[in-house]
Length: 151
Image 1 (cartoon, one colour):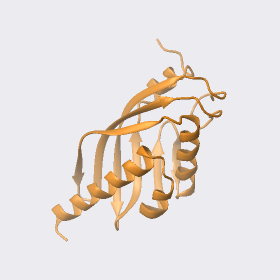
Image 2 (cartoon, helix red, strand yellow; image 1 turned 30 degrees about the horizontal axis):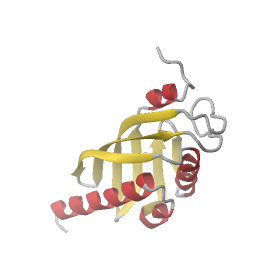
Image 3 (cartoon, rainbow, N blue to C red; image 1 turned 120 degrees about the horizontal axis):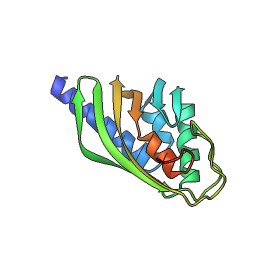
């Protein structure tokens, strides 16, 4: 497979992963497209290894924020095994208590809204997502959730 074809395939894998995992909250995509030793890391959720922790996180995140939505902003950039994308997302906390945060936790149904953006780097290995490492504007989201004071 040529480098261009591999990079295009990697973009297609990331697009599908993003739409299913973040867009629809489908944890099953992790078993389908995630590597056994997946590294998943965002400041707001910490570093996770393997498939189970990211699956649990997206289910709990979606339960707490049922209207959660994420969209890719602009074009994905691929270079070899890496794919980089910008995105934005948000939702309203109308669900159960949520404690998967670096500071504090939310009691049930606060009604607080979050809207934030970020950049994620994916590494694709043998047609699977081996790494998803991102920066998600955690401070902005935590301020919107009133867990960190705004200046």
